[in-house]
Length: 321
Picture 1 (tube, helix red, strand yellow):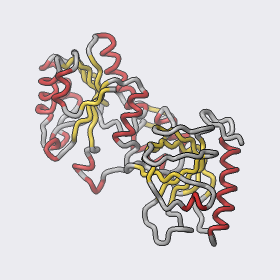
Picture 2 (cartoon, rainbow, N blue to C red; picture 1 turned 180 degrees about the horizontal axis):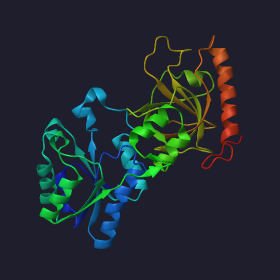
Picture 3 (tube, one colour; picture 1 turned 60 degrees about the vertical axis):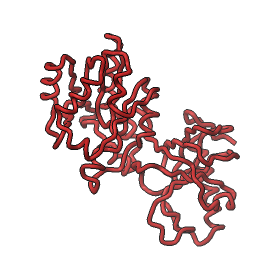
Picture 4 (cartoon, rainbow, N blue to C red; picture 1 turned 180 degrees about the vertical axis):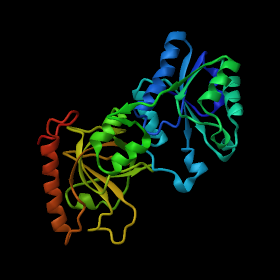
């Protein structure tokens, strides 16, 4: 997959260019319809389909105090787009200067860079430009003036609700992974890099990977049976594990930031610096403060056995001894 970093780089791609534009946080079912529209146009008319997204999330510039936690970081988003078959992505920097760009100036920059711009697909309620003054009607007028087609994709509904990133965040925060999966069209996952911790898990006989996530929405604190997808390492016999998400009250006094630790079942290897994508399968128990390390070790052993029972036969896992 080719990743472009500014609008000017569009000029190097064969036209007509079909752009799917949006933040696409989560790449959920609604976003997939917007992306599919651009890919369909490109297939029918030749040229190149490009997914255009923004980094950081515009709310982090416009109203940082109200910016949501993300369903996926930019790096995570790129992985998901590639899985959808997207071949070109434009990650456009969103700055204070970007926020002052009018709707006409924004579209004008796209028209000048593409050879030519043939099609734009967006969500029907999408707004753009300074003070969010641009809407689907203005986009259609600009399309008519500059000779490109426009498709405003209607909202996708599921079980009587409009699929949205906000609704998915609520489901994740509630630990409702089944609902999140329905709305996303895939398992909800978090992506992060394995970093060094205090190595206490190894001392207890259950080595853990400390996963640093990038401002991604997380479920409630607790212990979970998980499936793990990795890059930069090979899982020997399975890709299942037990995750602890929380403040680690038994070993951390006064911690305020939640940590995510994963123990891979039957794995022995070096994971530091690797990327780890984690699928939360089932909640096992609440996070508990134990009287000491021996009690903690005994409970972790029970958690591992409970996870094995749940994960045996689960697609993509081999949790048998």
